[in-house]
Image (cartoon, rainbow, N blue to C red):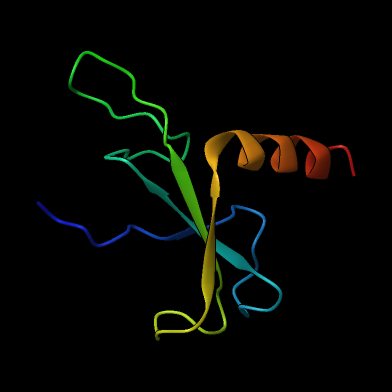
Length: 80
């Protein structure tokens, strides 16, 4: 089983890499929306990993939150 996380940046990130976060979903999910495709079932992530893009891909600090907390955060952030 591959335990390496697939990190991605927000579509709002710029190419200079300034002030960007990278996110990875845990629990066998593959899409940015946290849905595994091609299996006939949708699986929500249990954990969301977050890191500063300036320290990636080195072993820079990262943290993880539960999916419910991440959803609350992104909804709050989207309100501006």
